[in-house]
Length: 475
Image (tube, rainbow, N blue to C red):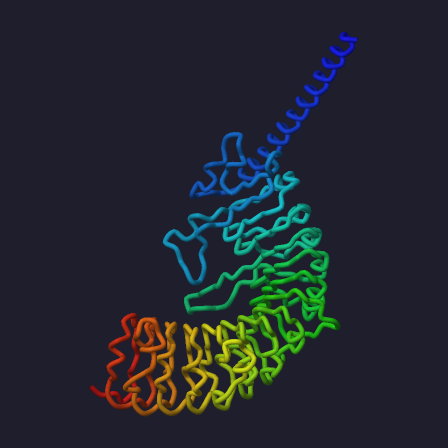
């Protein structure tokens, strides 16, 4: 009996050791396989700043930009986003020095568990987006934006049914010796139907990708993506009217940005049925007609930009219902009438004041007339206010001192007259006990202001820029 027990123990030990050894060999094979795929990928890249200098040795899970699954060593993420990208707002001294370029090796296909791939803000020009990306079916996140790719975006990206984030935007701006000549559209899509297969997609970035051949099909296709929360189609050469879908299925959509296109349309009324919207940007198009009255019924809206269009009529009083609105830009339209004496919001908002969370109000060049309404002084969280190039009249009210958070104020090029108020509010409402304590830039030029400089101008301790020319001020 004892001999049988010993035999069983020895047999079990042998079996368990064999399994462990085979498992260890399997893991080692995986490690070598994954490492080889990464080395082959690196071999195609040009890396002038040695960003990938850590890509050596066997422990690739500690290489720069690589993320691995615990326990298995499988590569699940590659993040090689350029840490110092060039943008129109910021131009770095060594712009381009941190760019990766060259060829994207198809060895990436071998990384079967890869879920996250970010190559954004590098310079892979002038090559097309590789077709093999459409075979990486475990991808959840794919960011190829601002990489300099050219040509048609491969339709087999529609195979990536697990994809939640897809961005192939490009916002490069071209200049000649004569100045700005337009946006690049080196990437294009002929038929957008393949996107209907991206059933898990939440974020789509396609800024400055030429969609002119798609026509009006884009709305019906994207309307079939019920999980979509962000849609970015700025500068895509879309034109004509903004179609109305037969049934609005975009019940999760929070952000829609379709600025700098060629839409010749009224405001799309179907947007008003998407109560989840947080941000709407249709600026720099050819929208005409009136701002819809029902716009104020979108309960979650925080950002609204309808600037640089041909909208007409007055600003509806329902804008005061935007309890959560933080940014409002209606500049460069053909609006008329006065800034409303009364707007909604005093009863619907908990704060008992309209637009209680508004931080930026831009109404530049909208043909507004009349005097300053009292409600403007109630926007306690306002940081930027631009009412320039209108036909506002009368004097500047003392209530402007209530803007305790205001950093930028532009009232230039109006018909303001009278004197600057000797005393303005703010000494009691602002914590600093001084009016406009955060103001950094003040524009009052090109008006008809008279009399002397008031003392409070000298109390603006953070003021950096002051413009008063083309008035009749004295002293």
